[in-house]
Length: 300
Image (tube, rainbow, N blue to C red; front, side, top):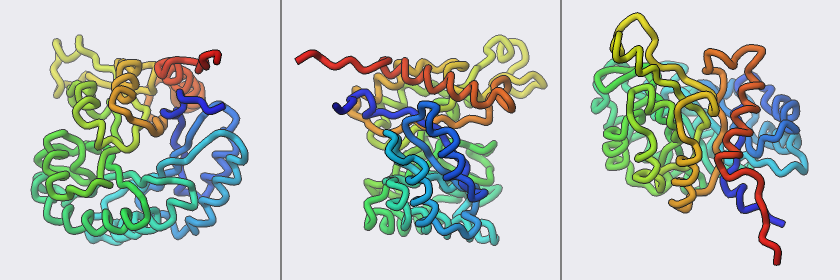
């Protein structure tokens, strides 16, 4: 019997840069994750992605686990050697997504370094219009993570897709149906933006969701502001932060959304190191409960 609850799956991210993504999937495949997002940082390091996809699927075996999205994070808009590797990595991920069973490739837009955000739009349009066509020809969607990577409107190194005003500009430059967002509440909350209304407004452009949260220390903001020595916000693993994931998932369902929420770990100041997987499994269970808990079929 199919499980309608799993129209939204809860999974986790797995680093693919070192060549051990399939091994890692095999190690944690029985912990309860329903999906995986293998991801690369800046370069694929020359890996055979078709072969990696096959090994990743073999590691999953007959378990009810999917790979809907693979990640390629870097700056494909500039022209340094690593930027060129990132751009080639995007092309390779798009061309080989089907070997993973994936229908989406996610990452940063890239950015013209140390320039105002709007200065990146011409190069953004040039690069991503071409990649969007390449992806559409293969039935693949492109999703931009809403992460600022410490950039802002005036300057930055990696990504312009961190602000809803930028999304308006981007989607005007690339109106392609297969270009959208890899969204998460954390990256809005760290800039004191309320994430929940974004789900209602942008659901049709959200292709993939990262499970990452934030804790805002409002008492610190009131006393020290956001530019003082005291840290006013922490990135958190879901279940330890301020987001109402029950409402987020409900809004996604109301919008008819289906897909994966893949947990992005390694940022929580408490549940890290030896406690990393403890935190991730807590997040897995928390998000499954926010999804409605165990599926109960109606007796026929």
